[in-house]
Amino acid sequence: MTTENLEHTHSYYAATRNDPATWPELEGELRADICVVGGGFTGLNTAINLADLGYSVVLLEGRRIGWGESGRNGGQLIRGIGHDPYQFVRWIGEEGAREIDRMGIEAVQLVKDRIARFAIDCDLAPGHADLALKPRHMREFERDMQSLTDLQYPFEVRLVEQEKIHEVVGSDRYIGALVDMGSAHLHPLNLALGEARAAAALGVKLFEHSMVTRIEYGSKVSVSTRRGRVVADQLVLACNVDLADLEPDVGAKVLPAGSYILATEVLPKRLRDRLLPGNLGVCDVNTVLDYYRLSADGRLLFGGACNYSGKDPRDLRAFMLPKMLRAFPELREANIEFAWGGMIGIGANRMPQIGRLPLHGNVYYAQAYSGHGLNATHMAAKLVAEAIRGESLGFDIFSRVPHLRFPGGKHLRSPLLALGMLWHRFRDLL
Ligand SMILES: Cc1cc2nc3c(=O)[nH]c(=O)nc-3n(C[C@H](O)[C@H](O)[C@H](O)COP(=O)(O)OP(=O)(O)OC[C@H]3O[C@@H](n4cnc5c(N)ncnc54)[C@H](O)[C@@H]3O)c2cc1C
Image 1 (cartoon, helix red, strand yellow):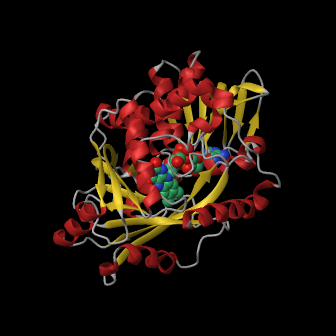
Image 2: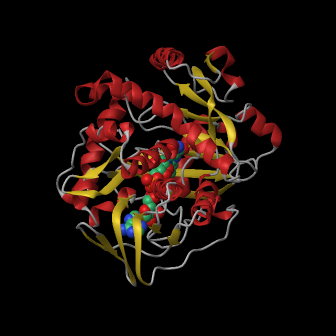
Image 3: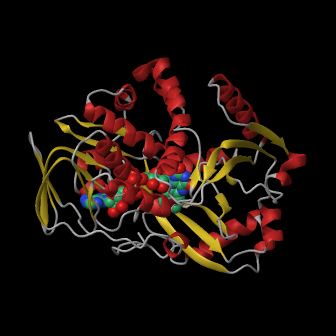
């Protein structure tokens, strides 16, 4: 990872964060109803939901709040959770699959509600478009439209044919689009930092630079950091790609894959209006997809690639630039002011993993959003909090979905993923 250090990576988001707050390192022993490990969207929102329910909560983050995927992602808030819930009908029934579809819509609203409730300044802008590269993608979009109609999706959704594609994106690479005005885009680090403030205001005790290195399971759970310890009735693991060292069994179900983003200089308004006339966030629908949008100050944030080797490319700019120029050759002269990456936590079936440890019923986890976690993290946080309170239909559905454990420890996992993804890439070419 380009990110071994403990501070925020050098990204456009870190450079434009609007809250300089830091939180102390844990020292000494604390007791709480619940300890949450991980200060990304999953951990922060679980903490907020539990505080709302009246629990005392301690949140431990090993680096900085929002240091992981949550503070460095593409910022695209897109409807839907996971990949095709109907493949799990054997375990969750048709009803369960429909419920996941429904939650995929609610999850976007959860994020919008969060922003509204706590007045979080994070550049929320409406609208998203999926972009088609092949006729079969347009057929998939027609099916998506139909299922959104079946789900009584309350926002404008429309198909855009090739003749009108420049109304959505100023590139000749695409043959059509599916525009969805219910999805959105935003500044993810400022969202995470706003959520941390909100959690603290609700009484959550937040700690940074407090890496949990040991868990002792039992009727009370105890977690240890370099200088402190928390003893709690329940534990929530929201560690994403880093869980393997702490909880190898669940950690072995997540595979890290690098994804990278370039931020151009601020572009002239006329050029911006040509590249993305409706200011939508967009992505193509390949497994290894390009995703991009304009920042609030007028840069193109162009993300993509997926590096399954477990190592970041040596020169991120050189690695990403051809992908950006393939979509927008006219940006050849634009300065690239930031280039950064992060590790996406991928599950073999691309469905989030939300559950409880089989041998330790007071330990919960949520992870592996497979690059589509902005909304899903907020839903997972809601479900985990509901389950801790007593019952949650959504939590029960997700915990019945089977997940593959990758053998061989973390060193073997990346080559395995590379093999699997090669297959998906091959399929994208067809
Ligand atoms: C480059 C990139 C682009 C993406 N783009 C999008 C997008 O546009 N839209 C979208 O929906 N999703 C996107 N995603 C995915 C999305 O960002 C994630 O699914 C989501 O942020 C995961 O949140 P999380 O809280 O589970 O994990 P994280 O945000 O990674 O948080 C986990 C935290 O746990 C901490 N931690 C780990 N181990 C320990 C420990 N032992 N003790 C204490 N702390 C620990 C880490 O330091 C980290 O801060 C993208 C991801 C990447 C990397």
